[in-house]
Image (cartoon, rainbow, N blue to C red; front, side, top):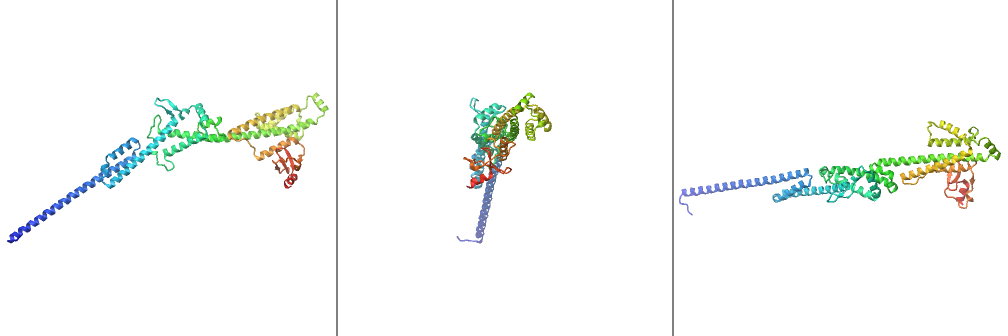
Length: 441
């Protein structure tokens, strides 16, 4: 194209400049439009993100199944909006998982509470008829509790129930590292009783089971005397009662043994005195009213033996006397008028009485401890010496040669005081050298 004049050239230049300005304007408008679109997208993403943040905060406050399910359904309904952006898509998935976890925890909580409810209230059919009994049936009904416990509470049963309570406490209160369930407590009513009430009742039930476990460990069964302690869930009382009764039974057994030992010593001494009377002495005694004990004329051994009897009987029953001296004075006054032969018969009756009382205490000891009563080694030694003294009272200790025995006893005990070996089985003392030589051969 040829430019004819300068005017034509100016027109062309002006036209080109005008086209350039239009292009720049259009580009600027497009840029502004693109910027507005991006700003709108950012605001929309922010709204979605804020919505998810609010939902996440709301989940922290919710604990019932219906509310959590409603929020989850809302989350599903807006899934396409959340999926527009990678960040919100990930955040929505995380929020949904949080709801899922909380719903699962809630179901676990409700399940364990429902199990506890069945244990406490019992199970009922659709007509409201009780199918199986519950713990509540025992309340204020000791006889019902007694029947159920005696019949059903084996060691295995008690252990199973305690295992359930361990699970119950762990899932309800969040012990032992399990996710905290405390947010659900007080917000669920399984029907007929609240979860808070059940938690309290299960605590009482645990006390009963622990008391029952302690009682069952004694005799492999719950004894009648332990039932009330189990009923009240008072394990400490059971422990104290057990200790008290074992100690009391042991104390009484020792008292009766001491009394019988004193009586037997006195009896043997009096028998020896009686054996020393001639027929003439007896006839004269009969004519004068009998063989009175006559404490004033009694030898020191007799007096000591009778004093021991008085001490033992004072320990068992002081008959209202505040001190032993007054008791002894009354005892000697009474017995001093008794014929020796009658007194000996009285002593035999007392031995029989105390032996019976001792057996009752041994039975009580076994009932509370679960084991036969056994004396300590020191008590055994004292008893053996008393028994031997009963045979040889007032005489030199008779000793035997161990090597002369056809069937030498193996239950030898060395008595340091006498420097002799003693066999409780044969009630015989053996010369120490004869025992040593026998085992050296």
